Amino acid sequence: MAAATFLSRFSVFAIVFSLAHLSGFSLAGDPFVSYIFDVSYITASPLGVPQQVIAINGKFPGPVINATTNFNVDVNVFNHLDEPLLLTWNGIEMRRNSWEDGVLGTNCAIPRNWNFTYSFQLKDQIGSFFYFPSLNFQRASGGFGPLIINNREMIPIPFHKPDGEISFMIGDWYTQNHTALRSILDSGKELGMPDGVLINGKGPFKYNSSVPDGIEYETINVDPGKTYRIRVHNVGISTSLNFRIQNHKLLLAETEGRYTAQTNFTDFDIHVGQSYSFLVTMDQNASSDYYIVASARFVNETVWQRVTGVGILHYSNSKGSASGPLPVPSTDVSHPWSVMNQQRAIKQNTSASGARPNPQGSYHYGQINITSTYFLRSMPPTMINGSLRATINGISFLNPNTPMRLADRHKVKGVYKLDFPNKPLENRPPRLDRSIINGTYKGFMQIIFQNNDTKVQSFHIDGYSFYVVAMDFGIWTEDKKGSYNNWDAISRSTVEVYPGAWTAVLMSLDNVGVWNIRVENLDRWYLGQETYIRIINPEENGKTEMSQPGNALYCGALASLQKEQQHSSATSIVNGQLNLIFSLMMVLLALVSIG
Ligand SMILES: *[C@@H]1O[C@H](CO)[C@@H](O)[C@H](O)[C@H]1NC(C)=O
Ligand SMILES: *[C@@H]1O[C@H](CO)[C@@H](O)[C@H](O)[C@H]1NC(C)=O
Ligand SMILES: *[C@@H]1O[C@H](CO)[C@@H](O)[C@H](O)[C@H]1NC(C)=O
Ligand SMILES: *[C@@H]1O[C@H](CO)[C@@H](O)[C@H](O)[C@H]1NC(C)=O
Ligand SMILES: *[C@@H]1O[C@H](CO)[C@@H](O)[C@H](O)[C@H]1NC(C)=O
Ligand SMILES: *[C@@H]1O[C@H](CO)[C@@H](O)[C@H](O)[C@H]1NC(C)=O
Ligand SMILES: *[C@@H]1O[C@H](CO)[C@@H](O)[C@H](O)[C@H]1NC(C)=O
Ligand SMILES: *[C@@H]1O[C@H](CO)[C@@H](O)[C@H](O)[C@H]1NC(C)=O
Ligand SMILES: *[C@@H]1O[C@H](CO)[C@@H](O)[C@H](O)[C@H]1NC(C)=O
Ligand SMILES: *[C@@H]1O[C@H](CO)[C@@H](O)[C@H](O)[C@H]1NC(C)=O
Ligand SMILES: *[C@@H]1O[C@H](CO)[C@@H](O)[C@H](O)[C@H]1NC(C)=O
Ligand SMILES: *[C@@H]1O[C@H](CO)[C@@H](O)[C@H](O)[C@H]1NC(C)=O
Image (tube, rainbow, N blue to C red; front, side):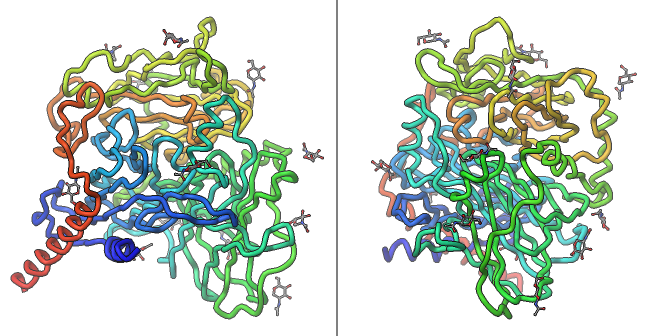
């Protein structure tokens, strides 16, 4: 216990300094932040039932990674779970650097009791993102946390500097842990209704007698008249959530790295894997506290009432606790058109600067010719070779034993195939395969996500953001191109696709590497609904892609290249702390000598 306290106190703070040349990891002359993440189980009872959750430095959710455009980030991850671990960075573009992406197709898993230092630069990005464990359904037990990229000083943000910032990690939750949930899926069953919705790792406020006593709920303390930037991430398993704060407007300001045209909403649908920033002004009279609600969407909301997440917004001059019924969403999911209209209303602010001084609208994506089209159709899970699997274009993905780019570099053949079909093959039965998309470097790809499953799905592409040019019900056809938003579509990395509907996105293939394309709904992802896209500069000149990092782990066909690691976890953590202290001392010494 003492060791854990020492660790969390110590490693939550990060070292930031511009004397990057002092560090061996530095990728450029930009500042860097460095974190130590000790990933382990702790016992928590978010819904009143004790269970093992995945904590980082003893915290659930994990600590915020707070950095600025162009910063170099080091995260030294110690795996103290009882199974392999990878952390992935949802929405981070990892320019030229799929080596640090943290998914099984490009990285060997960190074995238990081992550590691995992710080391990457946040290129040309701003905004709100999050990290989570990508293997074995672990996200269902926690291990997630916010990742913020601030604007550089010189680049204006398109609103007044907020008086404060608050992150919300919202998500559906089961009282069974990820191994138990995995075995339900392995046995061919669906997970069924979750046991609750958590807000920042906490259960619901007792808003009426249906909520059991003694549940710890989230309270957000605010001052009247102030405006806060609220970042909300759906880190759940598979449930779309409607987020709202009683009596308060949510002014949408940013979506996964793009400033939006600012628009007021009373409530907002946030699908699994999505991130948003809202500006919220504390303009109410504080006659009482206010409810913060995250409720299930696109389900029978009457039945799902009991899994509603409820927190409390508490003004410093509040005159009493919140009471009465919860506020309800402004749109009714029985009118799916009206619901889709909210998502269609998300437009980029074309005159705002993003990560660079030039306006976001200066990249005229609508004038670029499409060089290839992939029509990706997801179907409800089906039996393949005796087990329940989920597919895209009839393929249920099998992860290669050797990560793909590592296999390329070490000339291991036959690990994967570049033959992912560009549309469903109607006459071929669904199959398991290691098939990925052959992307053309510098091409301009159109991807149509067509959802033939029965639930809302969100699709995500690692290493990229894409323009969401249209979505509609029915089946996509070529003539739908006429309806595309070619001017101010939002660019993001996770987009929802309604059941029986399609979403069209455009993407410039400028980031070399091998990148995961997945459904963010964990149950379908676990059953194989993912693939990768490989984008390689045919003239391999050593500049368009970073070289394999020195600490890359080896596995699969290359396992024999892996050196043994110190297994004594305690020793390695203490060494980590000593290294931190040492680097701090070096900085102080350098400052003293400069001074
Ligand atoms: C997960 O739950 C199963 C079944 O309840 C239990 O046997 C197992 O120990 C739990 N695992 C962890 C890591 O808590
Ligand atoms: C992140 O760091 C910036 C300064 O670099 C600070 O203004 C901001 O409050 C920090 N945000 C969080 C959430 O820690
Ligand atoms: C493991 O942590 C130690 C510090 O404790 C660090 O020196 C080493 O580079 C880390 N290993 C990897 C593979 O990143
Ligand atoms: C709890 O509140 C919800 C509405 O917010 C209502 O539907 C439900 O009937 C209430 N339950 C009880 C036991 O009062
Ligand atoms: C949003 O709502 C707030 C509070 O009602 C109002 O002051 C503000 O002008 C609105 N902003 C926009 C862009 O509509
Ligand atoms: C505070 O606002 C609420 C809701 O807008 C209103 O019902 C109430 O009368 C107001 N109270 C005071 C003291 O102004
Ligand atoms: C939701 O479930 C309730 C209770 O089972 C049922 O009465 C109602 O018809 C359902 N609503 C819809 C829209 O299916
Ligand atoms: C767009 O950004 C500019 C700053 O460049 C800002 O002045 C303007 O209010 C923003 N427009 C909207 C609709 O959010
Ligand atoms: C796009 O395609 C059209 C018609 O095929 C062609 O005329 C035009 O030059 C192309 N534009 C670019 C920028 O390649
Ligand atoms: C089923 O498994 C067998 C043996 O592992 C394999 O040869 C076959 O290709 C698999 N079938 C499908 C549809 O993937
Ligand atoms: C992948 O696409 C490139 C063109 O971008 C082509 O030259 C190459 O032959 C393709 N590879 C395979 C295996 O289809
Ligand atoms: C799935 O496809 C079938 C056959 O094309 C169609 O009848 C059905 O309505 C579709 N379902 C959804 C949810 O898209």
